[in-house]
Image 1 (cartoon, helix red, strand yellow):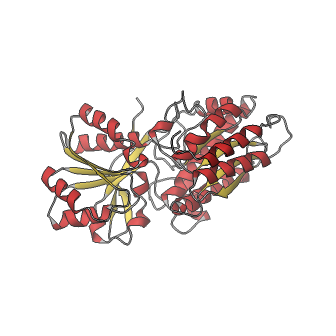
Image 2 (cartoon, rainbow, N blue to C red; image 1 turned 180 degrees about the vertical axis):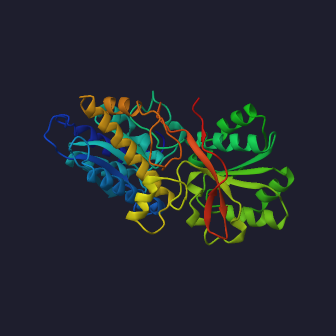
Image 3 (tube, rainbow, N blue to C red; image 1 turned 45 degrees about the vertical axis):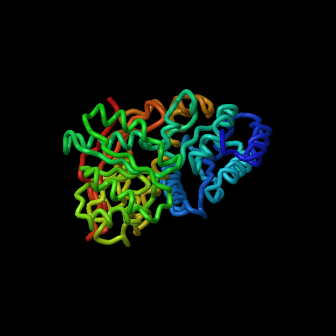
Length: 391
């Protein structure tokens, strides 16, 4: 709990005083509410705006089909600025105003960790959010949370499986930001690479906002990796790494994880971005393979929607599917029942948002696909089949 301020602790104390009087089950056709601590301003606003749109659009589709058991589902949310104290304050406010709130979207790993004891105490809702932190993939310690995709360690595992198939015994350098986000998959990546017969020849750590990466690029040159895997960044300093590596005629394939994989963030980088690869849990807005739900999205929104939109959309789909299954079983909408229902999801058709049927046996959906950036078309194109880590 290090790093939690006095203000946050006071907010949590206030939250504990706001106990629910009774579950909403049995109340005649009242709305089911998804709460949201969503960053619409601040450093993560680009994702928050897309996420909110994705949630809202899925709820529109669901409600047009009659909702859940004849009940409409709506989103109640406020901006957090990507600040954990504000996220907790929004949680307190929204849960006190909406007693039928049984689903919640959180904005960060810090908020997920901070609010977790309160989720357990209330036993009133399940939560997912913008975080893919491996820490959350722990049903014992995070029993009422889940991730609508693979966690960061699983993303690296998907990358490594692709590499092992494409170039057995490949030499790899990992480049991680010196942040909690960046350090997340380091240890698990070492172990998984060894299992797959891959060699990690260098591990580079940079400040999150590094500008001068010349020293790190020289390390790359000495290591001569077949693949260079980035994590803990959105865009910078990746283009600078790639530019300097190209100037040195270094032949390595650069790869990233979810938050670096939106094609729109690479659009202004130019030719140096051509060939950048990474793992994506969802299809892109413009994917041409058969996907009825993507067709529906494109009807609703003719303009490109970022990857955060797909994450929000699928999160709402899985949350509401858990609520639907709970009510169909005749059970109350408690966190325990909702999570149990979520874990009954097996071989589930997302309408093409993910290209294979998915299951949620624990706290993640460990599936992804490798895409590669085409600078001429400014699009990410698939270069692998869907890779599932489920046995």
